[in-house]
Amino acid sequence: MKSPRQGLQFPFALRTTGWFLLAIAAGALFCAIAAAQADHASEYDVKAAFLFNFTKFVEWPEGSFADAAAPIVIGIIGDDPFGDNLMHMIEGKTVQGRYLVIRKERFGDDLRRCEVLFVSTSERQRSTQILGSVRGASVLTVSDIGGFAEAGGTMQFVTEEGRLRFVVNLDSARQSKLLVSAKLLALARVIH
Image (tube, rainbow, N blue to C red; front, side):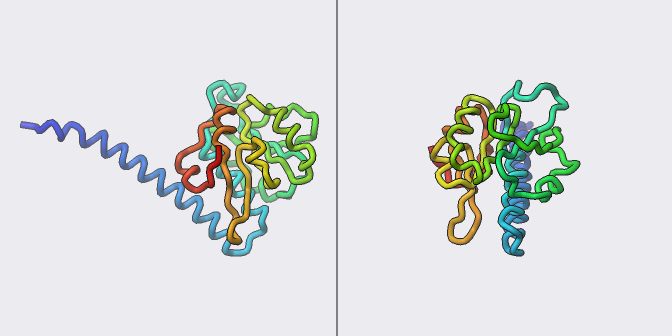
């Protein structure tokens, strides 16, 4: 005769295995980033790796994309500090079944067409206006401008104790209807 517990073991094992595999993937991902930092990679090489990996740990709401084949658009507004590094990093790769493309944006463009928007430090004076132009849209805004997350940006790169870290403004993410993975939040400094 089967005990009632035997019927519960298989679904529990699947959940446990799924979380374990996700934890391994997240750990490997961020170990690679840490290794890049240790090898004295340029600051923007490391930021490019973070930006690429953010797309793996953020979910956009249904209806955010024109169709099932639409790419994840990473917009860069202002001076492009990544050079070709970000483009080479994402070339031919897919995230969540979608290709990634980079689009150079200018102040005044429709920035809501981006899923990710990196606001360069050259746009410091206009960052409040840029954030206002995407308010309510499902755009993951990222920058290394001081105070960006506190001003309503979704993510901000910061240097703490000589290491590159990031801040996540959870209220901003929620207002943009973005779901940030708990695994990513565990690595971030979270503000509201």
